[in-house]
Image (cartoon, rainbow, N blue to C red; front, top):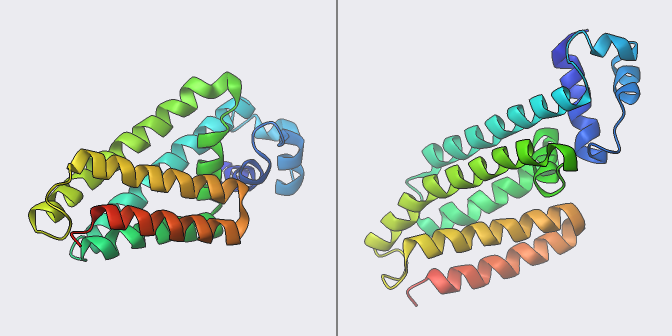
Length: 193
């Protein structure tokens, strides 16, 4: 039994049931240890949860940076749409992304400040990384030259937020409907035609 095993099991429970719906006893049972053994690795539920927040934050930032590095040469329309699709796919496949999205929208009240520090840092970093890409697309004539890159980037993050909401509440069909409609209107606002 290691802290990595505890974190893996905890991540799955917190991603599905949230902070309030997850007990240390559930985690210990699934790992196959006594609840007290968890405390040799983590001081308590809060420390474990915040460690998972740190890990999820780092994973999501790493994903964004890797995505940008791997897709920078794509046309802006393809780049932005594929980013949204990758986010959707990650949510469906990865406990870490499910945990991240759920925690960003539903942080435990007593840990709100610590969690939101990570969330705002993620959003600020995402905006910082996407801004020059959208700015370059405007300069290269891939999108309308009348656009402000700051507004276009902020609006893209609004589309992403809407998709995150449907990930949490809507299910696959509603998520796809929201993604298709939001993308269509966002792209129409960016395009030169």
